[in-house]
Image (cartoon, rainbow, N blue to C red; front, side, top):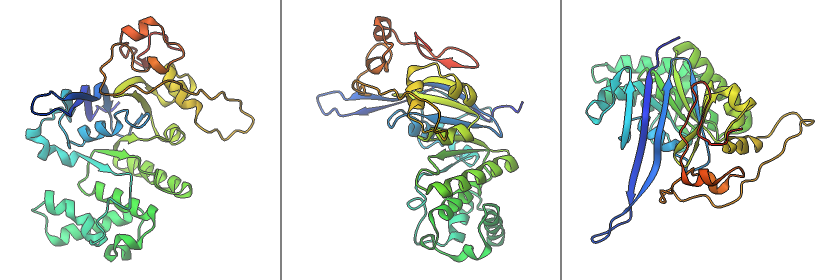
Length: 317
């Protein structure tokens, strides 16, 4: 088995909001105590409702923000702001919106060369152009697309350009932040197939952030389910979809459409209010909405336990 490229231990990110001259602000715990590893050729999916900490995790991995607590290692190097510049080439990101992530005033050729201009100042103009043209072909675009502007492309083609830009620095880890959610369903499979092909060819490790569990089921190798900044379940995709243990995971999966019209499925409707991330309440954060919650759940916070299939719950399925 290939050694992990990324190792995260106890990652947390807190933000102070509000407050003033005479009052102290409150702390938003956007991410708390997340552990995971990323290996070459593997895809780790992070799923959960909006506000669960998926995008915060992406910002930490791509070194946009520094973790409040915990450690992050890339290729056995402890990531700190002092070495961000030297490590950022190893981790790149593909954003959700292919329309807003490309500069409309720049041609595709320059968009692809820009990472090299910034990070590879020793490369000649001819070398940068050759690299950009090679990458255009790698993502399934044609040579004449090099001199066109982003508005001249469809959404799927723009996302191919975004993927090509992310690969210009030859990263080992690519963060995919909802990379197909803004695309037509007919185009989504093309982009996902391209990502799989690139992963196999280049040995990339993917951190895949998504709301679409049907996509995760076919694309990921391992899944982390998050709720209010904490990982509540972690396992292989086979284990997660066949035998979910956390009530929240079970509720999420109950809303996923199935292609089999004869299959029977009971949809779990969550009731109760979603706790505020400003309130650092004792106990399990999911307890106010959980049908299995007991007094133990409201007073004690369960840890994520289990090696092959981890779950943070006092009463797992």
